[in-house]
Amino acid sequence: MIRTTELLELFQRHRGDAIVVPGRGGRFWVDISTKPTLDLPLGDPAMGGHAGFALGLALAQPKRKVVVFDSEGDLQMSLGVLGMIAEQRPANLYHFLLDNECYATTGGQPVPNATQMRYHELARASGYPRVHAFDRLEALAVEIEGILAAPGPVFVALKVVPEIQNEPIGARRKWQTRTRRQMVDDLRKELGMAG
Image 1 (spheres, rainbow, N blue to C red):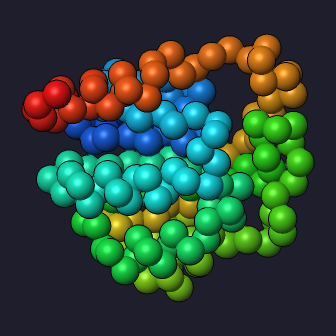
Image 2 (cartoon, rainbow, N blue to C red):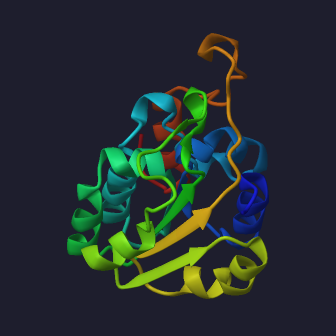
């Protein structure tokens, strides 16, 4: 299994100028990202919506890569998004799924059918043209440059170590320090769009 921070550090070295929707990995990503104005961490209230949001961004900004770090808990809440992404075929969308087999942000409860789900096979069956699955960082490190160079939509399923949060939400470190308005304003400036 892969440690989330090591995965995100590897990705950061290959990011370029991609817009990143960090999803459930957001609490780790904010400490790793070197381009926070290109990050759109939606936070916990968006469970189930990260991939759909990333699809909208990819369609709105077709000349810019959009990367989403989704989770299996999020994806199970919205499996229909796989078909929507496959149908729209955004060549600039890279869908990374972090699968730790549990709801880590709510105490570690198991995700339904956690050990049997093959998310990359669901993505392939939904029509994603390029699909990958990794459970070792070394194997991903060999392939990541080619994955990000290929046209999307690309789906990458990653088995990651569960890092469970058991403290009450109000006691947790706040990793989302910008308001949604600030995030949108920062991204618009970064993309050269008028306010």
